[in-house]
Length: 364
Ligand code: ADP
Ligand code: ZN
Image (spheres, rainbow, N blue to C red):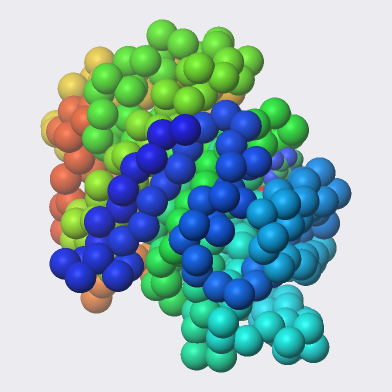
């Protein structure tokens, strides 16, 4: 089991560890017991993950004499709302969960976001632990302490910055993950290669078959490297006011495509289209060499991700959603562009005509 320290403040009260390994769930009990975080632990999980791993995690916690129970909510992004928050909160109150308790998020990004949010507001906040079970949550959303829920007006509009006390990444969870969910998470790994790590990018290019076959060794390598990159950026800019913006590479256009499709395009595919579009824009603005743009496009395709924008999605709708993306400041959109693979930079704005032309090209 690898342990990576996330150093967040000088007092280190918010600092915590990421534990990564294959089949480490059975060790979680001991590590948690040693941490002596709380008198009781409530696992929050969705219906799918509960059926697969609910009993197992309770067994592991109880084995080391920790008081543990579990609350389940219906799987899916539709649950990421205030109703679920209130249902979980009432259940916690009914069961007598108090300020000496902690929550454990067992699941994908949806579970992590809801659990982190509830824990940050329940009785003026109680601790929580992340046990991410999707590739997306293991390499991205499970790290960094962003929590949130959706409103009818948009995604993640209510939320907090609230760091987990520990993150346990068991690669064995990925064995039961459906293919499309696995590929969904790969887009963020590709993103890390593009914004921070040419070596990772080259590794992904060379091992794309083994990755799609979920070879355990290669998974360990790419998940670990991704976690290190994410945690390194979060350490410098926890509250997302500076370099954390680089993590948004491909996401300005990606979020717009996701929204314009009525969320029928997955986050991973939308971000992939966004990354290719942004690489093309960087190329057209004479920042990025063509060879690098071609490599990005080829890697996205080799990973099984979308490299074209469906013609059914209106370009004007995408443009208008790009304008309303919440990362906008004033009138200028902070676009993360590329100088080369591994070297991103932010530029005040990109002309709408250039975005339009690029999206139209990606529809062909
Ligand atoms: P994401 O992690 O992509 O943000 P979710 O939390 O909704 O999104 O997880 C995606 C789907 O995968 C959900 O239906 C969830 O129940 C399911 N899931 C999560 N982890 C696993 C796993 N290890 N094995 C099988 N299915 C899983
Ligand atoms: Zn993303």
